[in-house]
Length: 33
Image 1 (cartoon, rainbow, N blue to C red):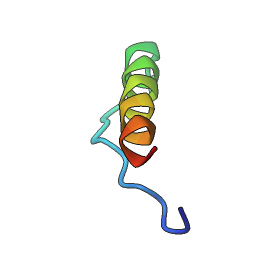
Image 2 (tube, one colour):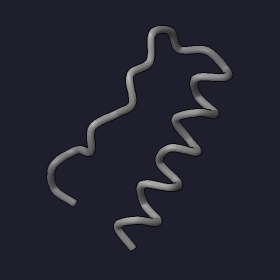
Image 3 (tube, rainbow, N blue to C red):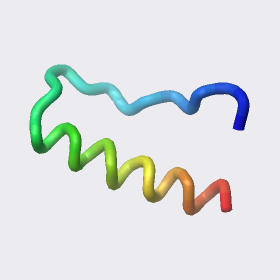
């Protein structure tokens, strides 16, 4: 994983956005694995 994976579009850095990004990354990593 050299190139940074594309982040999901987020408008503001809020609590919900953080949780959403966390879940998104969890699924993304699961795909890679």
